[in-house]
Length: 400
Image (cartoon, rainbow, N blue to C red):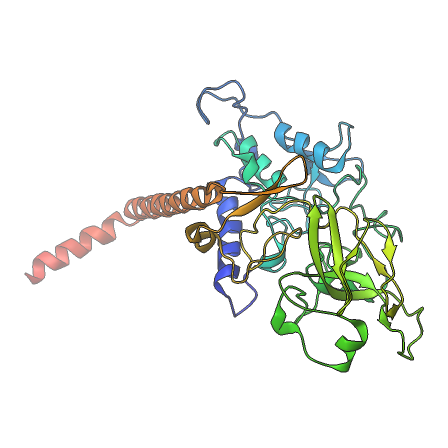
């Protein structure tokens, strides 16, 4: 996380939170000290150590099997077998536990080895579950953000042997353009060292964000495709072009930016160019009057909830982003979030600053750890070099 020479405030906030979570207990060097405090009245008081927090699965990869983590993983992937733990990053010594989640399984989590940009990283339920299983904290689980990656995909999701499935809704094949799985950004199908050959749509280096109006460049191409950039825009797989355009209608689907609006939970409309709003049924394709080609309506990705991102300048993948969003400034501004009611209506609601409290507490722990380390170092130095200090005092006395 310390490879770049340029950081903005949101990047620093995300990086600091990542490191503080390590300090709070998410570290391979601390797994053996995690405690079972399920029967204790207070965290960390009179709690026995867990017999085993991590172990190898049938494929030889280390997984975390602590109770809350396993329960959350079963809920997330929809698996029910005993081997449904969370895989840990297996780069390097694969036989040893790692201090990070496996990127193929929890892509977009803040606790992968190389988190993405702040606008596309989140504090996920599995990470909060791990902090609870340390035995040192009571965790407010509703502070976690919605993890879309791999939702309901079963135990084998994220394996190198399954990520090349052409029907996957999360991985991709080849090197074409498409949409990041949150549908906020355009991207290319790429891999990296942590994905180990599996490929995902990664945002372009510049101008990938559909929700940034400044990324729009008035050109014949935008007029031809009917694309629009701004807070209401999301990325859709499409090959739409004006009917009078000479380009073949059967051109490959690619990532395009179009305006969308939420109707009810999980239901949304799309606008292409100056067309009227068109209902976009999840998991289906639509045609647009005045255009040839189709637009795919993603299933289970848009208008699901309205949780804010902690680190980035956009809201969650399911609602229009707030520009220049930051954790503290959002809470201080009085901006209301939106929740869905059972009848599909939207109501404003204020969310408590649980994550702010977590970061502040972690900062206090960090300062305490540094102070203790400095004190121990000074005491050790005093024991190792007592004669040197005595000589220094004698010289000082002699000079006086």
